[in-house]
Image (cartoon, one colour):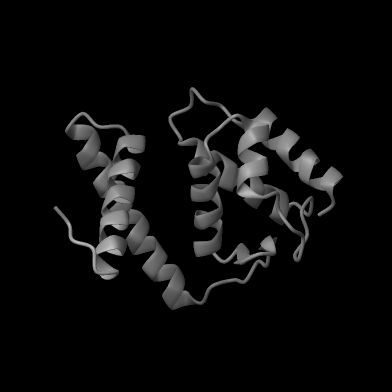
Length: 146
């Protein structure tokens, strides 16, 4: 994707995002990119804007864009190459992977419902999960959880 293509994608995303919607912005971004891929607006092999570029253009934190790209990568829609960027690859997962993904989605829905029953938002749940991931990474490198 050229700079023009990247800015066009960013413009389409900016138009489509609804900060007041119940759906998190990261999911809205991932969904819009997915629709552009299956609609042929973005082709396999094209490079997406960097996390920072897209975050600045959309007026969101880089973490929001990072979550969207991670979601797309887990689904086999994009691939990140360190030092090169994020590219559309659109590999269709096999049945076992799709089933595991459905189970993870149900687990996630259950976690969201439980968090909401305790008065927490999805963003607060995601922040808590990010804290757990960071603590586990630090623990794996010899750091200690406290």
